[in-house]
Structure formats: C-alpha cells, structure tokens
Image (cartoon, helix red, strand yellow):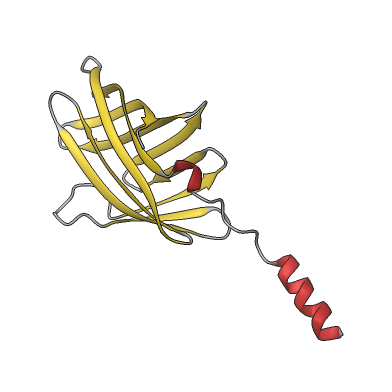
Length: 152
C-alpha cells in the first residue's frame, strides 16, 4: 500500500505533458511585409510546414522570399515536458541560419530564438497563423511578418 501511494505521489508531482504542437501542424502560406535595415518595406511571401514525426518531435520547414532574396529553412523541433523547445537546423546544404535555437510553446504561440538575435515566432489568430522572423544576415538586420492561412 505504501509503495502504491509513493508511486501515485511521484506521478502527481511529475511535470505536465508539454504543450503539443498539433495546432500548428500542416502547410501554411501567405504574405506580409519585410524591412531590411532602413530600406522601404518589401512584399514578403512564406510557405511553412510543421509535421509531427514522433511524440514530442516535429519537423519545421519553410521558404520565405522577397523580390531581392529567398531563404529556406529546415529544423527538427524537440519538446520538453515543461513546454520548452529545442530546434536543430537539419538543412542538407550549408545554411547561414543558427544551428540550434531554444524556445517555448504555449497555447497558440511558438517562439524560437538564438543567441545571434535570430527569432522565429508563430502565433495562431482566428484560424490564421502570424509568422514573424527577425535576424541579422549578410545584408543587415531584417524583420518580417507574414499572415499565413492553412493550405492543407
């Protein structure tokens, strides 16, 4: 009886299951605007996909473009029981994006950041997804926001 009580107390004290990325899964596409340094805002188009691989692991891929440049990304996301995320760059070609990003997931919000001031943020709003990126690149600091809708 004491063993059973001890096991129940241990289970109750364990952290809750991580926030699932299920709400973000699927293919998304849309557009918005991007600002590079002090230049005028440009049209910014993105396609992203989140796909569950195993419990607590999702594949996050995408491609965003302006009239001047395009960037693809591929990350494997690992959830922790406290809602934390670790994103590992799995691009098959050399990438100037961070190798590892850390972040948090909560209801309707997923945020990843790297020490180099790079950031991805996905926020669910009324059936759509706001995708925000920031980072320093070859041409300077860029900030973009695209409003995406589910395409699948």
